Length: 242
Image (cartoon, rainbow, N blue to C red):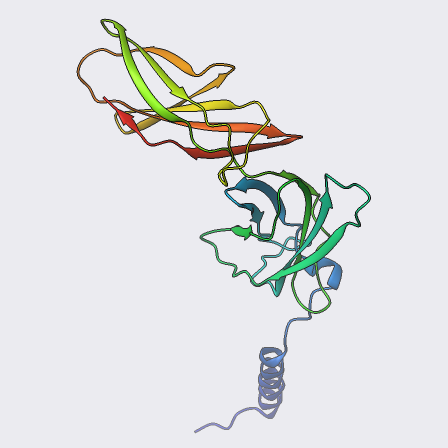
């Protein structure tokens, strides 16, 4: 058997050593400015006796790399009394631990620590680790009142063949039975063939429509009002089907 050329042995040794060192070497960490999470998206709405925050979780860093984990979401909450402007503003911080996965990027948080006749101002930021976090999002403002009760006494009257009138009675109370002094508007949900169609009503509590044949249809009605710049929607009434 022929002996290996000494020069080839030396080259092979250096090549193997280089490969072993390269495989064990970790990729250099990203600069902090490129590992900062993108700013989360934020919107809010009144839901019952609470405020629901809808947070779009970031999926990438500011450097364009995929974000695989978050240490925390930090929500800044400010409360302002609308009845007593001189009262000191209250500020709190809420820390949450969301899980990131590809199936969903929407995170919902329900803030139940709210009171009527208050302005709530929210901002949110994403924290990747101890040193790295995104800037705060834009502010979202919610003027809070309890939603109105659902309308009652829905009825359908046939005015003449294939032409009908739906009417209902509003309830000028909120869901806690406190009186409402604000004007109400309404949304009618008309359900036909398993599909919903929505009709908005203003300054009236009746709706005329046509219907042909014996196909079943159902209606529900929802009351709503505007409190400063916040639209507040109540629950839907029971269905009326015919």
